[in-house]
Structure formats: structure tokens, C-alpha cells
Length: 174
Ligand SMILES: CC(C)(COP(=O)(O)OP(=O)(O)OC[C@H]1O[C@@H](n2cnc3c(N)ncnc32)[C@H](O)[C@@H]1OP(=O)(O)O)[C@@H](O)C(=O)NCCC(=O)NCCS
Figure (cartoon, rainbow, N blue to C red):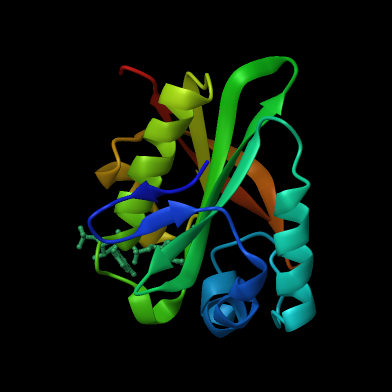
């Protein structure tokens, strides 16, 4: 895959030279606040290098793309097939550096990534799970055509605490 070009951002594979931009945009507790404990805090150069290398060696059914804005990797969007029991259901995740928030960028990125998964990767159902406090992410999903489905109680875990997961999905052709 080369890149998916939108009006506000482009989606493209991570590159080794993204390390500085990733640290600049990801090393922020306000970004990590909406994400699971897998997202490092602080986010160091070593974390960025490890992430870029992991993306190069991803499993089939997974795709992790940089969200490029103004020539830099400003964030990321990725999806992966859940498991072999749900072979055409994927889950999406995303983040964006704080300096770029509230310009519609992630709504476009999620819309493009979801369409790409439906059209080119055989996905028929894309799911997203959101922490209860994450109003911005909820809006992104709504604006990208996802529907709220349910609240899965105590399904998320963060900093030693369980949290309800607000569950959204979008169906191909739906
Ligand atoms: C969630 C996130 C990706 C949104 O990216 P973004 O590019 O700013 O999103 P958009 O600009 O496309 O849309 C944001 C929407 O949320 C709204 N919003 C922002 N903060 C809000 C808040 N505290 N309460 C209610 N709505 C809020 C904005 O007004 C906008 O909606 P509008 O267009 O109706 O006005 C970004 O905030 C982020 O990276 N957060 C940290 C990581 C994260 O939470 N990832 C998602 C995990 S599920």
C-alpha cells in the first residue's frame, strides 16, 4: 500500500524517519488518556522505533497507518481482525497529536481507514471501543458513520481500574 490521500490528512505506512514526529505528537498524557495502557507514557524514541518495527512485522489481518498532516506523522490509525472465530470483524484504534485536535482530521482518517478495510481487506464489520469519558472519540465515530451498539461493563482496564467500554460499529454497505 502506498498512501490514501484525503483533504485534511493522508494515511500511509510508518517510516523509520517518523521517530521524531511520533515522539513530538505521542509523548503527551492527554493523548494517552484516551488509550489503553499499551500506549507508552512517557513515549520515547525507543518506543517509536519499536512501534515502527512492529508495524513492519505485523500479522496478516492487521494494518497500522501513520496519519500524515503538514508533512509529519501527526498520529496513527490502525485496525486488526479480531480472531479466527470472527474472521471478517476488525477493531479500529486511533490517536492524534494534541496540536491537531478539533479540525476534523481524525474523522477523515477513520472514515478513510474504514472504507479501505471494507473495500480492500474483506472486513464487513468494524468495531470501536471507547472509554466513557472520551467524548471527542465518540464524536469522531458518530461523524464517521459508526453506530452506538451497547455498553460492555468492566471490559476495559486502565491504570489498575476496570471501566465500561462504549461499543460502536460500522457495517460495510450499511
Ligand atoms: C479522539 C481524537 C483522535 C479526536 O481527533 P480529532 O482530529 O480532534 O477529531 P475531530 O476533529 O475529527 O472531531 C472531534 C469532535 O469531538 C468534539 N469534542 C472534542 N472535545 C470534546 C469534549 N470534551 N466533549 C465533547 N465533544 C468534544 C469536537 O468538537 C469535534 O466534534 P464536532 O465536529 O461535532 O465539533 C483525539 O482527541 C485524540 O487523539 N485523543 C487521544 C487519543 C484517543 O482518545 N483516541 C481514541 C481512542 S478510542
